Image (cartoon, rainbow, N blue to C red; front, side, top):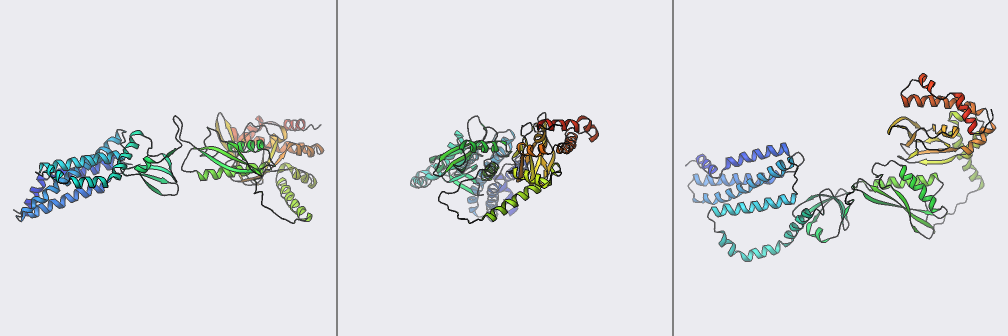
Amino acid sequence: MGFSEALWEEAQQGRTLYLSALFLVTFLVVRALAQKHEVRFKALFFFFVTHLVCLVAAAALHAYGSPLYTDFRMPAAALAGVATVGMVAALLFAGLLPRARLHVPRILQDVVVAIASVVTIVTILSNSGVNLSGLIATSAVGTAVIGFSLQDVISNVAGGLALQIDNSVEVGDWIRVGDTTGKVMEIRWRYTAIETRDWETVLLPNSVLMKSQVHVLGRRRGAPKLLRRWVYFNVDYRFQPSDVIEHVTQAVRSAKLDRMAADPAPNCVLIELGESYGRYAVRYMLNDLAVDDPTDSEVRTLVFFALQRHGMRLSIPAHAIFLTEESSVRAEEKLKKDLERRRQALNRVELFQPLSEEEQAQLARGLTYAPFTRGEIVTRQGAEAHWLYLIDEGEVSIRVSDSGIEKEVARLQGGSFFGEMSLLTGERRAATVVALSDVECFRLDKQVFTGVIQRRPDLAEHVAKVLARRKVELVAVREGLDLEAASRRSRTEADLLAKIRDFFSIKA
């Protein structure tokens, strides 16, 4: 018998053609259906190729008349059976069930494939005339030894199945086990794969997971996946706790941080009374558990700027001693430099250009330093606040809201100002202002400006003219009108002048 004839005969007996067709169909169907499902074709390819090798060896021995060819038929048949089980499992678990929106846990897939493979091998060997009962009886001691050595493996498999059955830990959960915190990416028959925030993958044995205390982060029955974060800071006793809590709570609630949940709302609490400071904490709910430290950093920045705006400072250790020899001349130079910076900020604003140097200096001394960090709301539309902001550095976004739809109408940078209508006429804020970067502002309150405008009544006319023009521009942008049409609908300069005089009690 020739080699080709022997190979054809062995292929027919081993049903290799059917196996090859099934392999091709499995590859094409799974590639088409399982877009995001990982299918391990390497194992299937290994069993298929090993089957072909045994088949070719059996055909070669059969062609040369060697009786040993029958010794290769049995492993070829067993390998074909295992490959068939793997292909059917791939079609079922990776192709058909996902299309029906049924997702079987990976560990259950592995166990089913393993059991089916063992049953297939036993069936093939039994049909080939192998005396399995005698083999099992003579290997009782070996079976006991193997069973004892595999007790950890059995424990891991049982643990993995238990986790999947009771859904105590699921793929996608964030968990903490001991010092390991990360996201569950896969539950296999031996281990659970956890990806940490440090770009590591920890393979945690299922038996260890079953015996340890597991914290499932962010999970609460009937609630979205949120995780409470605590950001601590210390403020000394020069500042009342109620003021610290009020200002910090207002800052974190008004800020627009993408990863901070609005409900439950963040708040600030006093945690501890230390020897020289009060220990506070901002508590907020994180909605993206993968980004914890960067969000904490943004919250700390919010706290820092909120305290700065209200003249508060973070505490320093009580035992720290600073010795600075500072003469009155140096102190005077620092004050002069700061006042010059404020005066220049005032001089860049068209409203205050008619003021004399003395009047500008008076306003400069009354300005309040008010920094904001990126994402903070500087002022909100509809709020009542009788002061104006001068932008020294940074950029802000001016946004107006109509019927619940917010629209950006302008962006202002250093040298600009906003809030003039609230300062000069007492109107509520016409727009919401959000810091796009770290912004250094100076705040001019009504009490400070009152002293200047009452001594210079003519200043009201200049101010009214500037306000009228800015009002026209805002209406034009907000309502999509041309300047002429907006002018007809906006308040006239005379109306503004009358309102300014009334607000500051100036006689015409």
